[in-house]
Length: 355
Ligand SMILES: Cc1cc2nc3c(=O)[nH]c(=O)nc-3n(C[C@H](O)[C@H](O)[C@H](O)COP(=O)(O)O)c2cc1C
Image (tube, rainbow, N blue to C red):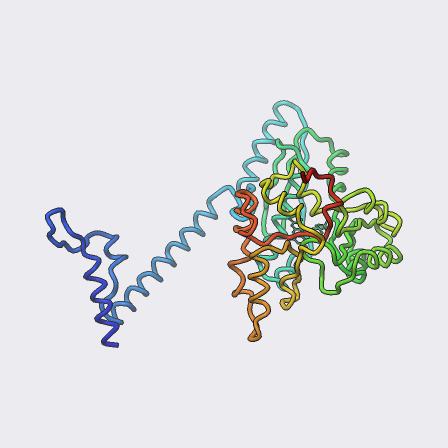
């Protein structure tokens, strides 16, 4: 204990500043109060208590600011307050110029079970995906707002009541499934179509390991709603095969990452297209959240941790698989900087100049 006290006192001394004349002066002002190390454990407790009070005050202030702001912080769209302001402005304009507009209110069902089962971070991802889908369906002049937890509103300009009804009915839900039983369950719950993903697919192929050649006809036999086949499709031959197996179409993920239009650094595209059908690997298997990714240095590092005899937790690999790393890799072209969801396919499926 004594030793610790002496070390703390020494570091406090080191913090003192030196004037140009070489004279030592004690640090001053609020910065000094933050950086100076406590001399005793009693001091340390006081500092911790003070920091906790400051933190609580800051959090309360953030809450206050969020409530008074017009934007939903998570989704970056107008919140109830912002939306109501837009709506009032629109109503005034519509009355004055005798034009038209439509208001659609959307209530997202079954969000709570997602939050309960997978945590709020997963629920937040679902909300973000919903907003992305809605934004893709409206014009840039239209407004989408979040009225509350799972309640959204759309303000659509120059739309008749009939068109608004058609628009509201136009939102289609396609659910990704990796097992026939999941597809049937989604069908019962009212989705419009399913994407049935074989074991070859990028991202999460599920835990049953059924390749598309088996899964697609098995699903086609029992499903009544349309089904697109996913996993390993990259050209017309694959699509023809999927149609023969009973799918209504195909979904291509990995292949589209290699198009000229994909906003991904050329280095990544080149490195990936030079890979073969043996260059993907599975991670998160023991967490029962398996993901198929491109086999690079990061992927191998994750695999080494996952293979440890003493076991591992998600925390041990969290830094390696962080989304921010992925974004950096896509922009900078550093192929080994992040893990990359990648489907199992062969370069011969890509019309690509490899010379
Ligand atoms: C870059 C990329 C990211 C993906 N992210 C996810 C994901 O987060 N969750 C998921 O279930 N599937 C994800 N997928 C899989 C796709 O949803 C799709 O099912 C799959 O890509 C189809 O197989 P294919 O890549 O062999 O064409 C991702 C695919 C790619 C290429």
